[in-house]
Image (tube, rainbow, N blue to C red; front, side):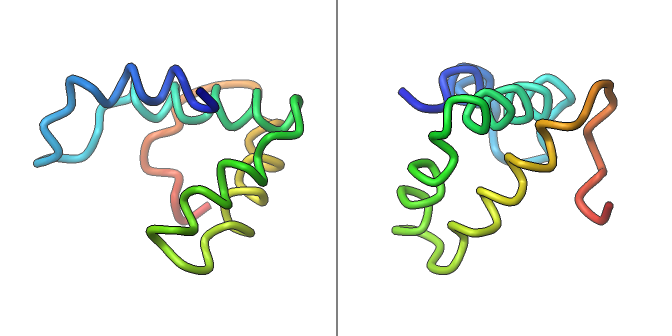
Length: 79
């Protein structure tokens, strides 16, 4: 599994409201790991099946999050 922390974190999310901080943190952690392991493009390719054109955004996000050192991550979509 390429995003184990994210999958575990969202398993309890109802999908109605914005995810809490733990889900954002799990996503950031998985993306950071994917950048280090050079699997970000695989994640982007898979997500691209559902959201065409997203592959480069996933790869770019993984690269950017690999430089983050601290929290909070929630609400940083416009950064």
